[in-house]
Amino acid sequence: MLTSINQKFFVGIFVSAVLLTIFILTVDFKSMLASLASANYLLLMPAIGLYLVSVGFRTIRWSWLLKHIRHVTFTRLYPVVVVGYMANNLLPMRLGELVRAHYVGEREGISKISALVTIFIERLLDAITLMLFIAVVAIFVPVSRLAEDFGVRWGMVWPILAICLSLLFVTAFLLLLLIAVAPRQTKAIGQSLIKIGPRRFQKQLGDVLDDILHSLASIRSVNSVIWLFLLTIPIWLFEAGLFFVIGISFGLDDVYNSFITMALTMMLVTATANIGSSIPSAPGGVGLFELIARETLVLMPLVTVDRAIAAGYVALVHAALLLPMVLLGQLFLWSEHISLRRLAAIGTTPKHDQEKHEIPNVTSYNKDSQQ
Image 1 (cartoon, rainbow, N blue to C red):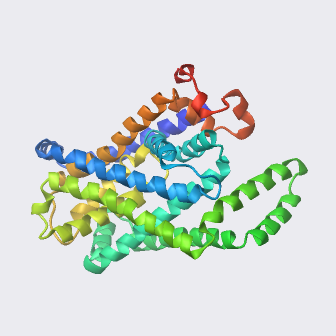
Image 2: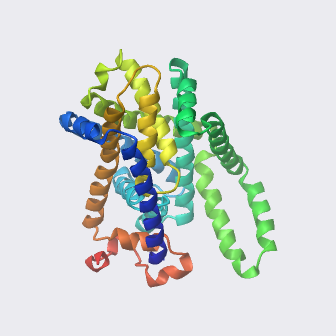
Image 3: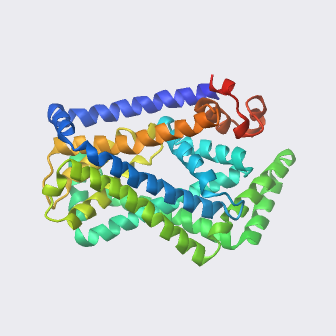
């Protein structure tokens, strides 16, 4: 399994290298470095602080999703969330989601399947909320022109892509809601299908089905779904705050005619960059994030932003999103004497092969696991 992870890692690095090469070749690199040198780095700390608050709201939301399985306190869950995002920033194909599910399973005695389902719900909530952000911004900003310019420059039919992604995310969420509100019917159908398969797998598949249905209890009522969306909104507003504050450090507040216009722009850049870079590929979406965020900023029809300044800006924004999670996550792992390599190996290994890797409880990992 480690070999498989290494192979995916190098594929991800290759994808990032290609995209970063395109990013660099399509900008005046010296001017980009000059924009980075002239930025006000005193504003970096409050920007990162806003992002840490965003991660705090992610923790509260995940706690709500998990509460029907097991109550986990904020202080216990926050390190797990950070480690999961650290793993996503370092591992390809969003393997950090598997690491997070395994970590919380070992730490809190939660079914890994149930944890993974709640993480999937998170991703759908995020995608739908970001698309709602785009819809709100479109009321005040001519987003259609931005899409047209994107299409002309990069040869992509963005309206069709946006519609397909919207339908995909909304349909998946509605399907989960349907399963959640009809657990008995779903279980009956599932058990009928399981009986068709090999008998030796029927018990395991039945347990998986039970875990999935149990994990969907958090979205069984309308009030719960509304509450989850209300928790998702500040997650992205605070992350957009990071984009906004770093924009001020690059003097973008002088480019826009008002803070409101700039705030709407930063919400749009936050949404497009995160939706685009969520495609499973390179670690942390490196390369794809930079390209999408820069082009959104440059092609916005309201004002003209220099491409080199935009490139320096998105490079610093992405670094502010990635590095704190990596450093803080590693600090949490060191405090429990856990190696990310070992955690990733166990978290992505099939259950029947885990005995050779597994240690009864994550908190009992010793220093030898760091080797």
